[in-house]
Image (cartoon, rainbow, N blue to C red; front, side, top):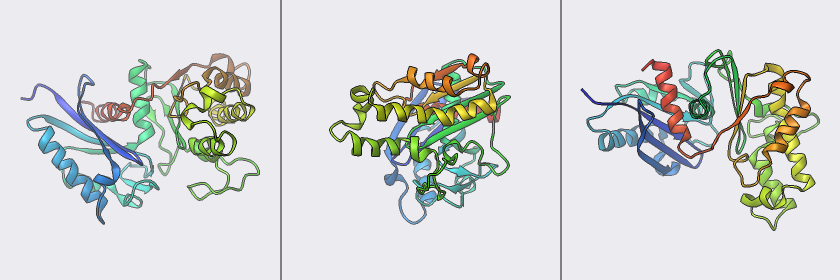
Length: 303
């Protein structure tokens, strides 16, 4: 009998795919970071992914008890988390039953979830947050990743599309979002917008150093307040016990977290939830999605 059990956690990003084996003690081994385009090749990218994973397990998990394969995907998914409805940055996944395509290659369970949910599970573990009551996670990267968890279960919604915080419509905005709708919130507070702001307003500053060097500029102060609005909207609706904030934007050097919290308080309903905001920050590590995938799998499978 194998000494440990392992979950193969996979974080499928728009640029890179990260993967690794995580044991029951949440120890990571056999970590790989591979360009997405070198794995998702040919006409059938799901087949190429399955073949790559078969090779990975044959080489790196020989003799190990792998109890599940779990992938976090930046995509809109069906309620049963089998079919990817829309994944604009992952070729060949949209409209496909990804779970069935992969499961046919493996004897252990194959599970899928949104990538933000995997980050959320890691943050619960990292910050020792009991998975109960109402907890929200807001991850500000290229767009806005969002998780709403109620009584220990992430909310998926009637069709699987709950938690699309980035697609709150903004009054009088008619620009077209990547989702196809007009004036979505993430088009005005996501990382993609921040890059455009840097190019047009601060062309002499590298995007990485934008807050460290120009954080007091009125344009960036306005950005931070605007960023607080979707977060506070969800806080005012749900009155969560814990608010997890993370993502690449909030991890930029010099990002004014205290100012963001000030604006969240400003726009929160008084006295509550404003006077009882419990905010924690994700550390935004590159392997967090892998750890979270394993934690998610063990929670789902009860192992």
